[in-house]
Length: 451
Image 1 (cartoon, helix red, strand yellow):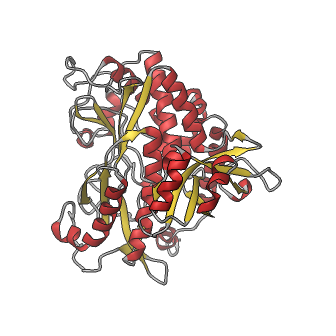
Image 2 (cartoon, one colour):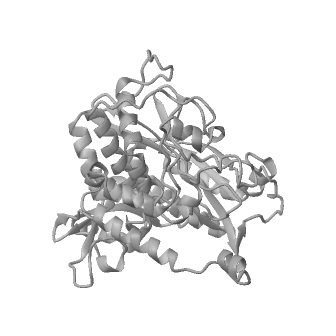
Image 3 (tube, one colour):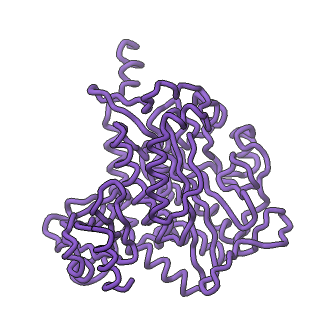
């Protein structure tokens, strides 16, 4: 973007302050607030951050400052606060792009992709809960009208109507930003919602997903609610996914290279698409560490929970590494020709890391011309573990440490992350160990008087 034109735009929009924003390894937004007259300084030099104060940046207290240089093309008004705008930033250290920055790493992978003649277009379904928290720390679905109580609340008018003001504000804000909002709904759990906006190139979608979470938090706070993208805040309700919809496009024309008029398998996918899917499925167990990066995410991916374990009767989440047609029980479904959706991804994911890892896996499939096999057109929830084993279908990791072991042994996925891979493994193994040091309410209730 032309800088002088941007300055005129900032003046026209009445912007007084800028949020210089990057993400840590968890994908959490980190910011500094900067007066608008410092635009040139944060575009050329950056806003300084102490890397040791942020999770997963490979720095300690003695390290040189991380400088967050704004990407002028990411200018985004903050609808919740007049006079405030957000710029996504890339981290630099000593004047060089910082390899531990998730956004810098994704740009590296996307540059390699463009050199091969491709673009990666991605859409995300950002499922999330609106909650309240008591003074004792307990949580409950946000339900000011006391009507969101159905066992199957998905699409319910009363549940959506009670959240109308929240959804309206978020929809109108995204519409003003030009994101192409096209639908909102009440999801399968009480207090759970989804707002859909159009897909874009991978970097833009990653930036938008991070900003969407910021917007959801601020909009929910206006109505006395907490917006959470935690994968499974309630044991007896459906968890939150961030289903990925994606395809490769021609770098010059923008044409969808996953689409094909003739496909013997009947899904409308090209040979290139099948090779890409072959790579994703081959590396799915390692990818799971990025797509489901917390201990809590694996409460959502449990085997055998397709028909049980939730109030609604379904988890809507895959447990096995499969692909199919327009069938929501598969890990990857094909809702229409040239269009695939991965349903395994958790709303707690870091989009920069996950998109880079998916590209590493998919491009490996293209290089090796991997075949994903025939699509699974059956109800995967009903087949059962023994039948899937008989068919040689692999199971997604069932806890974080299993996924981390897969990532550690997968050279392709690790390479897509650069030095972030080792830092991610270190941080997440520490998270797993800390989790196992906790004594939970379930343990006390079960064991206190057993012996």
